Image (tube, rainbow, N blue to C red; front, side):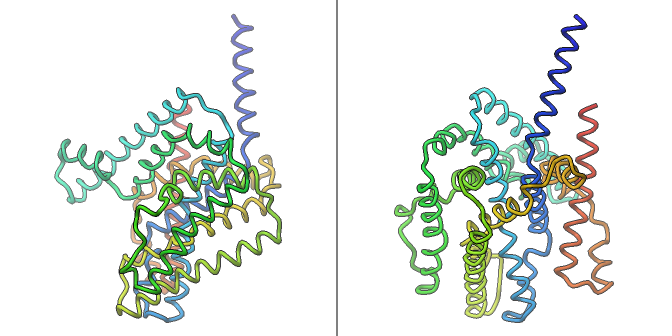
Length: 361
């Protein structure tokens, strides 16, 4: 019996060590960067440009940053595709993961619903909670969980797709996405201020879907696309051009209408695909040789392993008077937003790290 126990224990340790060795530091860095900008997106920094005089230097800088940070959620799906689509998961394992995500979604939906109740935004009602949970979610940022569950349920089809897709068809997929999401809407706004648009039945909507396009993109960039310095330069040229177009459309609409509103977010992701490709490729190129055994690598893996918890917890963290203090000190609004995001991310990491330790114990 002791021999059997020892064998099983040794095997488990070996499996855990093998899992750790499989972790790529650059993937963990991608997760960290993505979750930071998710938090930034949820902070006041994302829409700071709307409070600046249209056309001013601060307006343009803030707008550029606002458009740039939209890569965060697509990057998460690209990472998932890069890691998951190269493996064959049994339907049972996929179902187990779906159930796990559903339980987590339900628990945190209830927690955020109770936050609403505590603040006086809602009167507690089980029926109200279940209706919100079923129809639109109890808290804005949890929409990601709903989409991720849909992605998991679609996984067997995506796996079959990437397994049989030649590299040239990935490029065709990217081209279609840029055509429908970027080029066509840009032309429609410049010519007709979006009052005339392409008949929706003509659009290949599945191509631009988060749960199809970006997982396939991640699989391509990790397994089939050789990243060189020359290619990175070309990618960034096109990426900066795409961001500039998005900024110009927002600026033009602001000048035309004389004001800005949250509606301008519709321009932000027009060429977000290029941005996601650039961020993924750049991080992989810069950090692919970093060892998981180095101190830097270990820190990145530690933070990266807590990213899901950071995402779940960050809007529950009490901000205190930090934002007001930064304002009184005289910090630039955008710098204050970055400091606030880093603060929330750090506290969320600590909370997640402690919770994971407790669960392991």
